[in-house]
Length: 411
Image 1 (cartoon, rainbow, N blue to C red):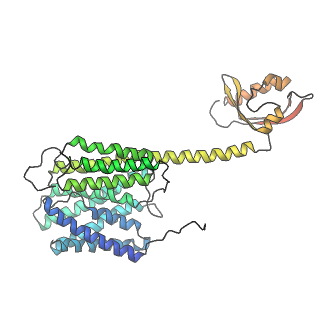
Image 2: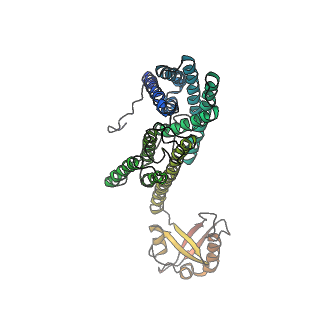
């Protein structure tokens, strides 16, 4: 280990379990209390995302224990918020089932912590959020219908959307992502982050107009194209969390996007249409920003790999003890792409000079040029022979020539 390397300390399982219990209990209690201001429906349920994140970040042997902790912490939060014990217990079971389902999908086929590095990883996250939200929506709706007189269809849609968005906003923050260094100028980074914060506050605090909400995409796309993936993920999650929170207080363009919410309703009480439109905005913004961010990250990786491969190949090419020449065929004429110093010395030509093939190959020129052209055009698998080279010296020299195509493509 390098003296400058600081070992990463793992969170102890007991600390992870205790932290999960406290956070979910507090968030569940706060969400239930807050939902009373919005006709009993929370705009989003952060505890759902925290529960999934807690399961996938736990050591494998402790994941079942974390699912049980989610159950009892959610139960306790609901009871403390004044809900009946039976209803709270069933809600706790549903929340635990949601976390287990979403975590199972994210972890399937993976050895360690799930990652967010490719578009396939983003798709896996979307499916996990949908599966977990469907489980909680079916379970909690069935519970409410059996124990109360709630309307099933609106409740099902509310739960499906709010829990899916919570998973999509929280879980990416704990997924394994590359730790790329920030290569953009520090001034640019501060300017972009300030613009995201200012845009979020202004867009979701002024007079509501639906078109304003999409202005948030501009600074976030800036981050997606210029900054490391982890920075973009953090920015889009935090800005959308802030947008949902402000919307819950009746602020911003999403609080009454279609004008279908009665004017005398409490802050944050959205019609079902407005509620679903808000969740659609959150999910679509996340996908629209992370898709180019992941694509840009993969492009940077490919360019870095190509650069490393080129440096290795160039080092071997230039330092080779044998003469090496890379040729191409353009309109039936051979042209030198590159040659190393040994080949230039053997041929007695400059490395960047145009080679006089007829003069160089002498009597072998017609046959040799035809063979070389066939190989370059993809009509021959290769050639090896001894030929006489007239390299401007007093006496010609014999050379062992081996030719093979670099690719299967013509040229």
